[in-house]
Amino acid sequence: MKNIVILISGRGSNMEAIVRAAIPGARIAAVIANRPDASGLAFASAHGIEAVCLDHKAFADRAAFDEALRQRIDAYAPDVVVLAGFMRVLGEGFVRHYEGRLINIHPSLLPAFPGLHTHRRALESGATVHGATVHFVTAELDSGPVLVQAVVPVLPDDDEAALATRVLQEEHRIYPQALRWIVEGRTRIAGQRVLVQDRARDQAALISPPLDA
Image (cartoon, rainbow, N blue to C red; front, side, top):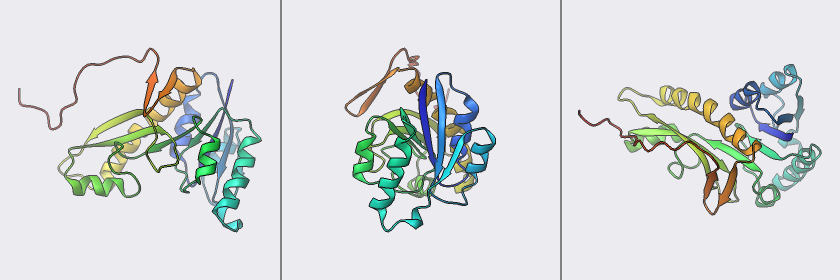
């Protein structure tokens, strides 16, 4: 059984998707939020998961919060730490402590649009596709080895909200899948690549806009 700790800052809809997936061999040991008003804590508690608030505002600086968070997480002996809408930049020491065990989901097709406001930037760029990326976390923001990506088309009448909704639907699909691969011991990091054992191979190309018949 693999122990999973999930970090959130708000509702944590990706946390909800992971809990509902009921991944065999995975035990959600705790959900930890850095904000006392994070509604995802109530969801976790209702599902029998230990729900913990560690308010970052109660600490003198980022380093102090990171250390307290690390100690709290380590109490659960985690095999994987999952960032699910955790809106705090974590320090290099924290990240290195969980190297190879810390994953995140980002609402873009990395390396495109790291950081914030990804949907707005995708629209402004004229991109015809957008999406989400599950990746291992490294000290450099949004730059770790990619586990899986989902692609959605950018439609002519899209605004930020419409595009974000479509991307979020795919996030809820790929995040539990990526975690399942890790729990099953099927992933191996090779440089900037993540190799997944027995992953289905689809040779079809995604072309957007579609080519005329």
